[in-house]
Length: 229
Image (cartoon, rainbow, N blue to C red; front, side, top):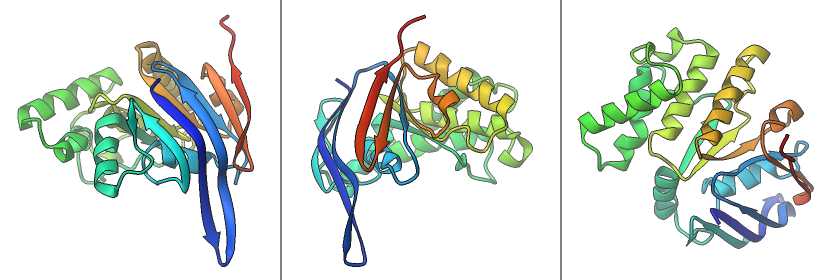
């Protein structure tokens, strides 16, 4: 099992009032799955995404990622796991404005620190070729379209060969045609064996996934697997 979550809870305090963002979530995700997380605003989907991505820690419960218990780890260990195990794709791309596409994609390898400069460059090139940007490697973000920027972000998420690709509203800033192109790429990545967890509020985007869970008031209220064909 790639992800094994049991009785996961996250409580925030707003003034003196506790707010249960997640209230006892159980979830398992197998390697190679394509999971969409849906729910209205305030349902807990962003909180769950942050916990799965090791960007936050739970109040209680268990989270095992790729055989490792991560729910009680400190910041340094969580940062290491984020860099080694998880690739992130965000709605706002989060690219460095003054860096080329190639330099942006190299960044996770720079942070990881074990690859030589030549190896970093080669792996970044491979990732950009994989997302169809072989001819845009030396362009900066302001020279790229929104769809191309998101492809750079996806290449950056893939360059460390992560166990898990997390996509948070990946088409939120794109028009419908470009959204279709990006989702076709995400589908292709899943077809190649990448495990994908996608957060979206759009049913047509969630329909790309093989499985959809819906959150409401911090709980999973449905878990549906799409039938083949």
